[in-house]
Image (cartoon, rainbow, N blue to C red; front, side, top):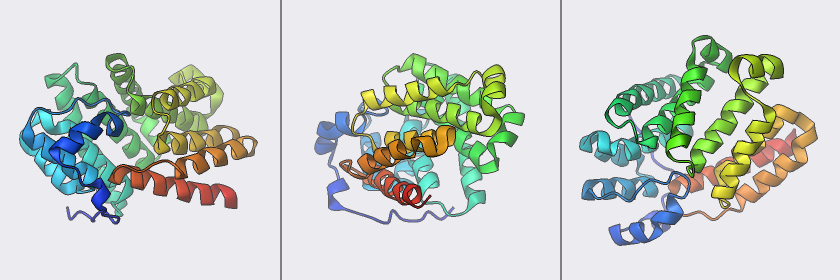
Length: 261
């Protein structure tokens, strides 16, 4: 597919191998990825943080299964934020999910293979409708992968965010009774997952944006002020790379929508 370019290139997002390693704990506080030993993967991550998502994906995939973490992150961030074709988005997320299932067989103790599997299936489910996805049994796959990712990496904030989204989406679509009995989802658990994520990554814009969306799904106008506050805080978060720039843009759009609703 032809990849759309990252619209906000900035020298501040251009890292060298040395500066990337120095900034790594800050840049990867949310996914807890280890700094790569393979120089090709260092270059892939440099490309990712600069917003060169296609290059990052290609470099990662060229390495093989050990490059899937950077490749899948680049592909999923690109598809979520920059791909305009709904059909291409669906196909992309479906492809990532399938590759992650192979990764899980080869690297059963790598939380990345489970997290990106859940993320891709979750995005795919939203694309076809959550209700349809639940009928196809995708909800159980998402939950199993998130549970495994958190078991393998309890400090992985992005997995806690995704689990919070999982609870909110199902409760929003099927209600508390069916959601609780059939899928084991609860409003309290949704909030707990987001609070855990924010405790692990207090400077995360995307954690706040998705928490705000979850609040509005579950509580509506009762939580609008809190949701607006989260989006305002997200819009003020520091930006260290291309993805954080896209996250902050999402926060600003969310904030405008909440204020107009």
